[in-house]
Image (tube, helix red, strand yellow):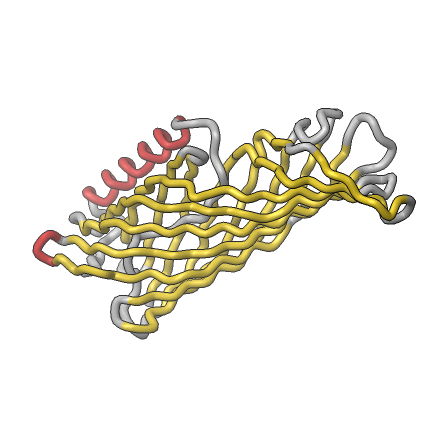
Length: 277
């Protein structure tokens, strides 16, 4: 069902402009977001025995709820205590992935992405003039996609996707009220489950949409200059949302992808480029 196109086709140029307008509208929508990973069409994007390679980037901002806090100072005090729940506001995260997919069976695709992460947040954890800017961390994601129903009479396919991702953010937390920086290590694991429809439009343009379910968990550890170790848990979900996206065939093998995800906790924009052979 793939359609080859040329870059000079007037219809394609018009649709590129349309996708640009969509990006502008998405950027204006909402202010609270989380850096969810892009999902792509809810279907197997490659045929059996076919490979795909690509790159994608996502950016988001959210309020992270920290619960179940505990403290300890192994240097001076063998006992431990509890910490109040806290919220990190405007946690900004960016992820850049290199991805690969493979059609391991008819209507089934497995995919894997490995890349870099970076995050920052402001004066939120202790309200003491803080500034956290992580170094470049590691992110890994993987999952499966399946085409469940093929409806050629409607130029449509129905399918599903399940993906997991893990990301690490490690850096210094500098405050205005201490001599040296604290060290913060944040690990997050997310799961996204989506179902939906993919519609094959004219001139190599494909659009898709559907509902999704989102969970994420992890922990944040803080080591301050006095030797205190603080740790909180992060555990949220299920969170329901909807997502939509568009794919445009630049050539027979190169595809550009733009995607928007929205839930009660997220308004996220993702973009990517895919090579299929």
